[in-house]
Image 1 (cartoon, rainbow, N blue to C red):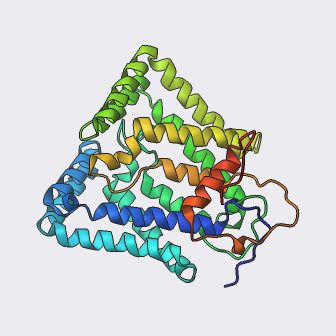
Image 2: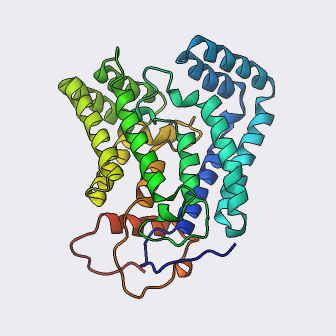
Image 3: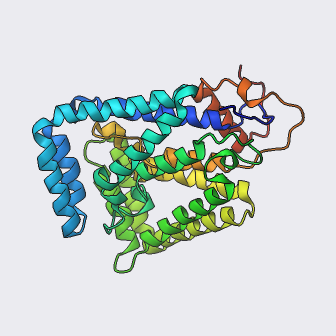
Amino acid sequence: MRFRSSPAASGRLTQRRLQVVLGVIWLFDGGLQLQPYMFSKAFVTQLLGMQAMFQPRLVGVELEDLAQFLAPHAAAWNVVFATTQLAIGAGLVFRRTVQVALIGSFGWAVGVWAVGEGLGGLLAPVMGSILAGFPGPALLYGIVGLVAWPTGRSEQETVASAGLLGEPWTRRIWAVLWIGAAVEQVRPGLSPMAVTTSVIAMNIPGEPSWLVQLDKLAITFTKSFGDPLALLLALAEVTVGIMVLRQHQVKTFLRVAIVLSCLVWVIWQNFGDILAGGATDPGAGPLYVLLALSLYPRRSTGSGSPEGSSPAHEPSTALLELLGEVFPERSRPGRLR
């Protein structure tokens, strides 16, 4: 399949760069899966046991049965888990295997979301909040994968326009994610403040001391302002979802979404708990940022170089340049080469 490209300025997100960055995240997940703890029975029993605790009885029993099935051969199963994620990541990095890798990622993401994440915690009182990664990082992998699917269409106003969903459906899904997160956060029968503080408290065990202190400060700050702070967060989520859907001040609200996603990722998700040594992925924050960047409108340019000429194999440099475009500095002494 030939990939048609449109002119793009240096540092602009392209679908190819999106594929590569997504592949790097999958490779990182595979690396996390190779931690010594992941080869133990405790990993299987604690992971699925924790999910079962927050689920309705019927779902919880199924997760407990699955834990008992996997535990006797936990190390062998973990080799399969790690190999699968590493293969998906490598497939996304190399252009010729992108579609095969994406197909594999969709199946894997749905399975992990349903089992490993307990349907993303949507049936659980606290785990369904965006603060805990609503609607589950695995499902977000699938959504970003649909945006990254190469259709051969030219990338017009946004990268999402070239994906399988197209820009209109990507914006609709964006709205569902953000509005749904707000609804989950203020679910009837729950105190928004209790949800906020509970998510932070669950992340404290195993974290480094400086991050524990940050968590404790966040809990104190949250309790000082009470439910109004949580309700204000829910209002911000609804606003971000609606404004991007209606294409009103899109750049402004996508910037707000990126900042909010990063704050939630650091304070409430503790970088996806990767510093605690038991995480299997970096959490939902980076995926929300990628989705926001895929919807970010392009600046009009003159004759630029084609997308294919940009260094797609350097995702870290690309991300720095992308964020520089989203949050432009008023003055720059020079250009990083």
